[in-house]
Length: 425
Ligand SMILES: Cc1ncc(COP(=O)(O)O)c(C=O)c1O
Image 1 (cartoon, rainbow, N blue to C red):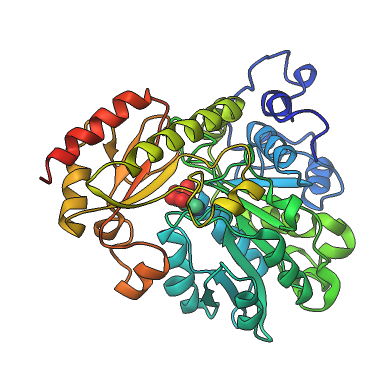
Image 2 (spheres, protein in one colour):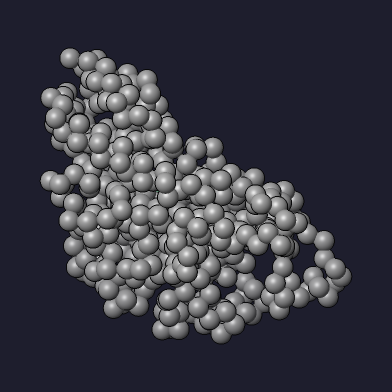
């Protein structure tokens, strides 16, 4: 774990000013490639006997600083950044799995991830059993001989269920499969899944970490705690045809997975992060801790106000005392419960759509984690492709409105919603 406090690491980790020409800000190395000293130097870089940069699809000095910083903030040994959060999930799963393998996943996932697991990956022979994540036993019961990963979101989008990571990680450990946690909504400033047994942490950097809604990005952080030598992962213990016979576990030890995610994953799938986006994301990461605290405070204040509004039929925010996940939030998210709220309105599907149309400060769009407040009606948009049962299991009801509460004054956000509510009367 970090040796300095979060706020300090978020500003400094990974950036040695003495090796970057004294630049106080992290420079943007906007280059595709790097000049080798000679052919031997190039050969050493390619066979991993010497560290260094080859080509920006594989690594880049700006991205490298972001990677080191994220690894530090999540308590991992190393990270790989990618073009989006979805790219991070894909690169992780395609680095770990092959046709015939199976995943046990929480049913409470971002709609895009749900589609990837339920529709796209099965086309390549990788199947998923979705389980209700509120009971860790459900993960155990879904395990098959070919199960090779557990996948969850620490704070589900949009169901806002706080998972009991300790119990689920114990089940993953018992069957010797890596426990992968998408920590996008919680952010490392509120929760470190590795401290509760996660082996791999995923982020969409597009959301709170960037914070300004300017840049897509993703990250994979390796805890370095998984034992790849159990026999279940021959790709790590036998010579890799994809990298001239390298035996990842022997040569790279605890870094076997994250090294493969870079040198085969980024190389073959190509989902590299632009150094310009890495720079933008670093600007956001510098202030993450104070922003997420304010997002959480604003969301709690707004959720408390929404509870008393006659148009609102139900509300979910784990910071609310009577929320079903409040006890887990006290354990896993004591510093704040992030900025997402969901609620239902009288009048169901049509009324929810109308409210999303009517707000002025809340922008109607498909994103979360921006400093500006956002609103969406998932049943008619992000979760439209799912059938009613799938919508229900991912927590999306017909009347559900999702808010991503920004950093504006709460009074203005209340007034904006109040006016929009008038539109359904
Ligand atoms: C929890 C979660 N994970 C992953 C993603 C995908 O991230 P990206 O849009 O950066 O691909 C999202 C996007 O909304 C998300 O909410």
